Length: 386
Image (cartoon, one colour):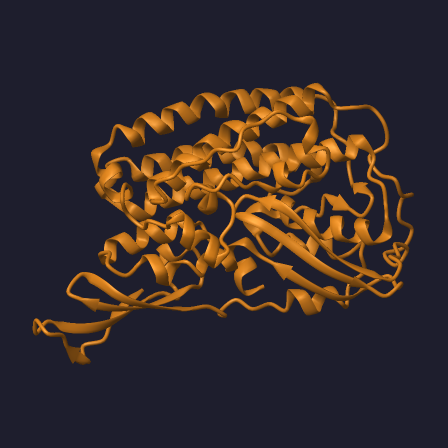
């Protein structure tokens, strides 16, 4: 709920009253428990104080108490909207320290699931973002229902593969837990083709809507210089003219085997970030098709089946592993002491770093624009507060 302080704090040179307004921490457009303390002059925001920490769940400390076999299913609960990619960085860190090889088939299965997860995450982002901007779009609720419909098809694929629809524990040190069942690849191709067609429909509905263009073009501009100084990543960084993607810059899990483009926009506004993600939809679907076509035979793990959760032990060492998540760079700094549990673990969530740009871009905009800007950042607060 949005609340406004009625106490007059100060008068500017024009005599207008400056008010303090809390947007959050339970405001629906905050995409979680985020509190933005806005300083207002009329409808114009002149200052922002971003407050986080309402969802702290001790993920990094919890990792020290769980074995390498147990924690991937907990890692899912950081960015719970893209749980597959949350697990990815953790197992990569353990595999790097232990010099554990991952079979080619398992690498391709990781690519397929992480790209499907990117599409599912972007679908939820697009639908909720349009819903945030509300009735002024004319079709905000319509786009939301369409996106949820397509996301359900991807969750059906995950359910038939893992048995779960939101949190998976699919990635394991040395490979993946399950191989694809019979008929799964065919169903996946059908789903990919359907979503590819629907994306064109989304774009026509939005880009021919003058309200959508007014709400997004020229709003929340992040310059290239600001993007690099603050350290944002993912679609936000590429929307500000920086062609940087970890899948291309430092390929992992056989991403070098696939052809795909890195979308870049230079305007740096909400519309540019939207266009980047719309291209990413298609590029992710393109990668999935290639991985299915070239999926090699062989084992799905380089390690034997677990008889005990303490069976996996990683030798002493430390490393930082990172992957390109739906919101940007997701990293895991891991220190192993030779036991079945990490000695220390530090999580680098893309949403946490990306939120740092808000106080730089929100001032000067109207209150209604805060909703559009916040939604274009696409934060998930499970990986902000951890």
